[in-house]
Structures are given as C-alpha cells and as structure tokens.
Length: 441
Ligand SMILES: [Zn+2]
Image (cartoon, rainbow, N blue to C red; front, side, top):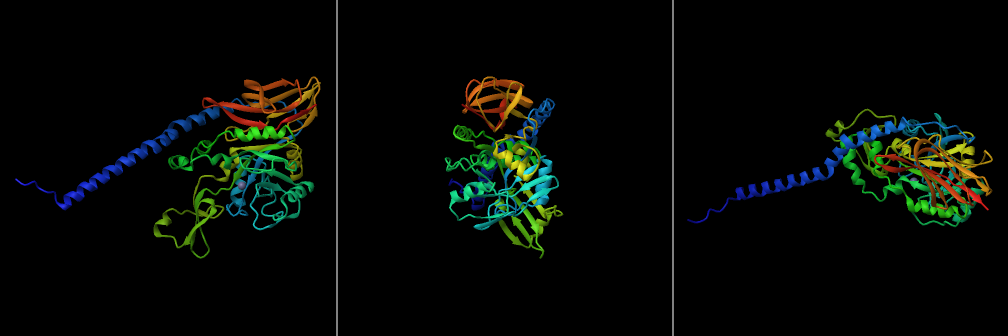
C-alpha cells in the first residue's frame, strides 16, 4: 500500500497549531518572567512596604531645635514648559509641590536661545511655593537671582565668575560627567540626581509594575531605580578637603516620560510621547474616543505617566536651613552649606540637625568652618531612629545603630560630615546626607 500524503490543508493546520503552541509557550514564559513577579510585588511586597512605612512613622520624634534657623525643604533642578523637553505648567506643578509638602523649587530650564534673560518662565511665590528660575546648560546649574541676561556663547569661566560676583549660584550638574572640578567659582554639586540613577536601569523593568498597579504604589515602583551614588559621594568628599563644595540633590523633574493627549482648538488631537515630543496631530480615530476623558487642569484628556511631578518631587529633597522663605535667604544659606539632602519618599526628614558645640554652645552648623580646639563635639539628631555615621575626610570614624542621636568628640581637624540610614525592608537604606562641618588647624 502506498503511504498517504497529507493534504495541503492538513499541512497548514499542523503548522498553524505548531505556531500557536510556540506563541502560547512564549506568552507563558513572558508571564512567568515578567508579570508574575510584578503581581507578587502588587499583592505581597508593596502592601508589606506600606505597612512597614506606617510603623516607621509611629517612631517619629521631634527633638529640641538647637540650630536657630528654619528648616525649608524643596527641589533643585526641575524643568517646566520653558524647556524643550517638558510641558510642565503651574496647574500641575503647584498641586504636586503642595502634596509633596515642599516649600521651594529652583527651576533649571534649558535656555531657548544663546541670549537668556532673567527672570523668565515662573518666578516668585505661588500658593505658598517659592519658585526661583534658573538654567541648565553646558553641564552647569545656574540661578542668577537677579535681572540680567546670560550670553551662553561667552567664555565659560568668565560667565561663571560674572554670575557668582553678582550674587548668583553656579553648581555642577550631573556629577557623573567630566567637569572642571578645580574651578573654585563653583559653589556646589549634585551628590544625587534621579536622572543619573536611572541611567543604569533598564526602564522596561518598571513597565510591568506600572501596568499591574495602575497608579497605585508609585512610591515603591519609583524606588526600584535607587542606587547610592558612591563614586560621586567619594568625589564630593575629596573636593571638600580643598574647598567648600555644597552637596545638593537633583530631582531633574520633567514630567516627560509619559504618553498624553490633548485637544487642539480645531478639533484635532495632539499625542505627546516621551521627552515631550509631539507624536502626532490629527483627527482622533473612533476607538480613541474610548481613551479620552474630560480635560484635567492642564488640558490633558489622556495621560499615562511614569514620572509625574509629584513622584519626582517627593523622591528626594534638599533641606535648606534659612531665616525666611525668600530667594535671598535660601541662596545665602545654600551657599554656606546649611543644607542636607534626604530621600523623602522613604520618610520626611524634617527636624534633622547636625552641628558642633564647644562649652555647651553651638559653635557651628553643617556647612560652617571653624578652627580646631579642645572640647569640640559634633552632634546629630534624627527624627527617626537610624544608623548614624560620622565621616572624616570621607572615611567613616564612628557608627551608632538604631538611635535618634549621636555625638562625636573631635580629636583633630578635618572635614566632618554625617549620614543617617534607616532600617527598612531588611536592610539599611541611605536616608540623609548632611553637608560637612569644616574644622581647620
Ligand atoms: Zn535637567
């Protein structure tokens, strides 16, 4: 008997079923490797973290205020509609700032042209939030704090010196990049930048979480990018052995890793993708109507946001110890290093203090310089119990675990700074970095 050859239809059916089996297998693997861990985090890990955070908050204590200055906290390095890569407007910025409980935002918009006149964009007090306009260009963060025009084509060193001499602030942006670290006109540097931190992550890793959680647990999804920027901290320490370089945190907030849509006046819809780029302007397809809702306060009828202002604003803050919430006072005390940074999506650090005493009197606070003498003691008080570490010239010299306060008798000159870590989710997490007290011979 001759073998029966399969028909063409049979062959097609077989290859179709084979393809389907492969597709199902592929989907199963995707489920197992990507979505299952995200579901696990949604149902187990994130609720656990929320519980632990609530318990941690119960341990909050307000210590007696020794430093005779107010503790204002806010954001340095943020972008608004003035930058080519953001669409941020006050209607979304101010509510986000209020929700994050911050007092000020030092904006750093990318200039629109070589001649850049200040003040521009937003400037002043808006519903209790102080906005100070600045620029980010040529790896500089500048806040002129004055009415003036910057010519960005001018000689860079002359430009920096001119700004500083007129009372402006000039800081190093993106400390992971090459800089003229020896230029003593710079007053400070970023010791943590969210954007710098994101660079070593595969952004896709957050997508399953964002899909599974649909707007919930954003705090923890955002925290998944966190790595301590140790190389930058070591660089900061080494620079401070020669001169004062104030450490700040940089939020680099853009609210631009999104997909959003808004109606234009002629019935067309603009779709805006990542980096605030226009994807498409056109008549919406019938099915798109399903996605749209009433415009929000900024006019968006659809939005799917990875980095809304609120999440960036509360992630990390710089606290400035100042007299008043005014540009002059904040700038004066920031230059003086009267500042610390804290990862506030873990817990607000309001009330933290780092200072030196001699003969029971406050002799210096973070950022200050003073001459070495016998009887100098450094003090840290923390609003939550944590691991308090004292460092001298970048080297740890003492560590105190699960405590609200710690002291250190100063034996020799040096640059002394303090850190606090909190025990969370089974490990010590960096929480606060304070600017150093400089003790010279
Ligand atoms: Zn930036």
